[in-house]
Image (cartoon, rainbow, N blue to C red; front, side, top):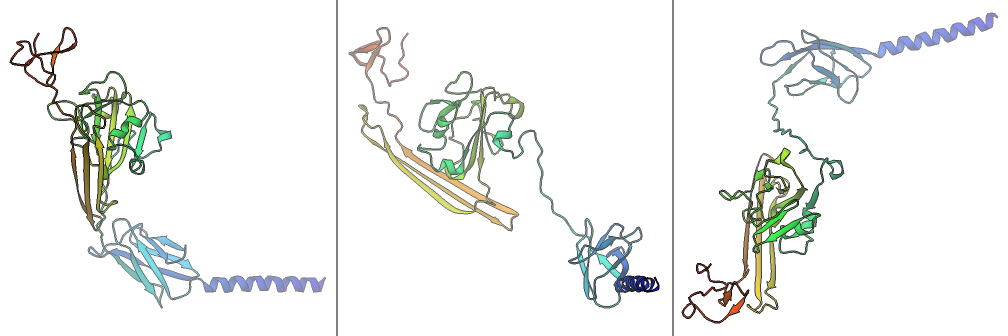
Length: 332
């Protein structure tokens, strides 16, 4: 019994000695955090030891104090919203440490908040969206990305020329579709005075297209009253992300097996230049040159509108002459 009691005393003494030794290893770090300009104490400043989780926040007068098991030397890190972060090396005395923070200018970016225009997956979108990425545009078998819109679901097009195509997804289509919106980087692409978009004549070049999104059906709630039949959203490439010089050349032929014309060449050159400086200022320029023979109005045959057939005669021999490609001579 006496032997067991002695062993218990030894164990208690050993545990107590370890506890005293552990407490003896902890040191107290204290000091004050002030504004460098006004010399006033700053409240709520985070003061931590670099590389460790221990630390505290300064009180109302800027003073701070905490215990740590870290060994000298170590580095104190003081940080506060609106001020630059300061690191202070502690090599000796851990009491009375004075830290001064200097106000820092924080540059923030513009934030635009709007309904259903935030980045989201197509499967999560509340409306049906057809999308064409820059990668898919490079693989299309068409004169331009705008011609490839015909491959999208529900698209109907009315083509007047190589560069003038009218897109529609719902309802009635026409050569000048006023019921379909077309936006480039959020800017309405309607031709002034016409109230509709003239294809991609004043649009963006194929090299500068980042993606194209088509919203078939009514979309006036987000994109204006003109989107009764649908809306086409074209986004150009960001000069901060896509820098450098690039060019693209396309060539081909048209009017193959055309009785009114021989085979005609098709040539198109696109050039894009983009550059940014320090991720703060960027500039880009895009050019496109297209040379092709779309169609030729060289048929001057006299046409009988009543019989719906051709007839003999010309302007000199027939007072009712009505040439196919002669305008201004229409008769009733």
